[in-house]
Structure formats: structure tokens, C-alpha cells
Amino acid sequence: MEDLKCCVTSCEKPLDQDYWDAQYKAKATGWDLGTVSPPIQEFVDSIQDKNSAILIPGGGNSYEAEYLLQQGFTNITVIDIAPTLIAVLKQKFDNHPNINIILGDFFEHQGQYDWIIEQTFFCALPLTMRPNYVWKMHQLLAPKGKIAGLLFNREFEEGPPFGGNKAEYTNLFSGAFTINKMEVCTNSVAPRANSELFIELEKNTAAEVHLYTFEGITCIGCKATVSEKLAEIDRVMNVNMNTNFTEVIIASEKEVALQKLQETVSYDEKYKIIKAN
Ligand SMILES: C[S@@+](CC[C@H](N)C(=O)[O-])C[C@H]1O[C@@H](n2cnc3c(N)ncnc32)[C@H](O)[C@@H]1O
Image (cartoon, rainbow, N blue to C red; front, side):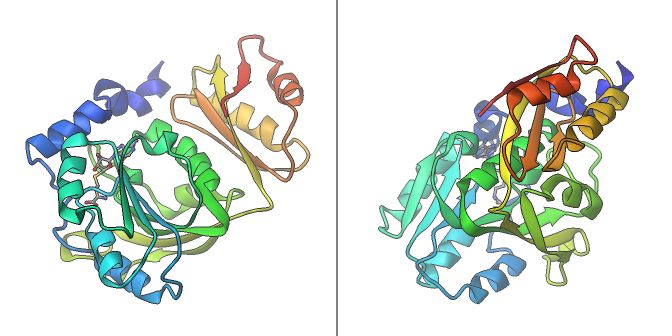
């Protein structure tokens, strides 16, 4: 059971709607920069098409959305799970026709976007959600759509935020996305200097990405073996299982039949793989 420690933080502290709303009610928003993040400002300045459909998940006080509006972008969506925050945003943007403010769970959101802006949303999620994040991002992006923004390039003692590094992110996003850019930022705000990667990840439209629930694994060694066996299946491009071994995403050139997946893991009768999407 030692290996299960990797999910202890997120298991002990559910990062759900109540948790996030309580942070806004208590004004415990240490992540809030109070202004648009400079690397994202620079990125926004580089987008040519002001009618691009842009999503900002977990947008918080949405300085990035405000900047997009100021620059004349016409199709901006912000989704956040915290009702207290969303009430403030609705007042702030006052039914502006170019921005849609949604109270909701990103993982249940439906839509098609040209760009999804990442700014301290990924790092706010429990580690167990990371493969699910990749799957959902792939779903929400239009063909050739891209994620752009920032990921932490460091670890934290206790999350959120939860950190990571380039190798880990490359392994996580490969197959489902083409990594156009993943490099240390040179214009981060001072407290985050040298600890952010700017990313531009393009949806790989040649990949089908599917999410499965998994039962029966209890240790990291078994996770590695199962992942290797799934990755050996013909036309599979990448396999990522989450940190508590309950979900796995498979990126492949063509969807693998569920029966084939079940056969592949049937060497241990405890293992069950079930399609989640
Ligand atoms: C660390 S804050 C970052 C906010 C903002 N991006 C910023 O940089 O100031 C994470 C945000 O994600 C939101 N959030 C967490 N889980 C979410 C979910 N499943 N769907 C939508 N929003 C979520 C929280 O309410 C919070 O506003």
C-alpha cells in the first residue's frame, strides 16, 4: 500500500466546488496575480484572428479574459466551478456580448474551441485528474486547436498547486497532442521566475483519445506493466494511467476494441478496464 501515498494529498482534501468556493469566500486566493500574466499577455498579442473561440477553464478573477476583451476578441468563454467567484465575474463583465461566463465543472463542459488558455488550472487539480484533463482538452479543441499557457516547472511540498516537469508533461500529452512549444518562460512574474514553462500543445487530430476506468491495480509496478502491455497494442500511440490507478487514457490511430483491451490485461483476473466516455 506504500505506493498509494502519491494520492494522499488529494484524497485527504477533496478539491471540489465547496473547497474552491470557500477559498473565494475567505479571500484565500494566494494564486491571484491581480493582473494578466505577462507570458499570456504576449501570447494573446500574437493571435491574429480576433474571432477565435477561446476557453479559459478555472479562470478565477479572469484578468486574461479581461485582456482578451480589451484587445477586441469576440468569442471568449470562462468556466469556473466556484459560485462566489462567478457571481463577481457576472457583475464585472455585465453581460458583455463577447464573453460567456459559465458556472460549471470543466470536465462536464461541452464545446469546440480554437484555443484553450491554461493559467494555474492544471496545477489546481488533484494529480489523479491529469489523464482526464488531457482527454477533456482533446475533446474540447477543434481540429488544429491548441492549448496555450503556463505549467509549473517545479514541485511543491503540499498542493494545490501540484507541480511537475517537462519530462512528465511530455509523457502525459504525447500522442494526444503535438508539443509545439514547452520552454522555460523568460517573462514570468517575479515570484514565479524560472519556475514556469510556456506551452503550446496542438490537438493531434490523427489520434483518437479515449478514457477508461480501471480496477484491480494496487502498486506502481503493476501500473507500469499494464501500461506497457496496453502500449504494445497495434496503433496505440500513448497510454497514461492516473496516480491512483483508477483511470487510463489511450491515444491511438484508431480506437482499440474494448475486448482487445480486456484480453490484454486479463493475465490478472482482478484487472477490469471499462470505457468511461
Ligand atoms: C488556482 S485557481 C486559478 C485561477 C486563475 N486561473 C488564476 O490564475 O488566477 C484554480 C481555479 O480553478 C477553479 N476550478 C477548480 N476545479 C475546477 C473544475 N473542475 N472546473 C472548473 N473550474 C475549476 C477554481 O474555482 C479556481 O478558480
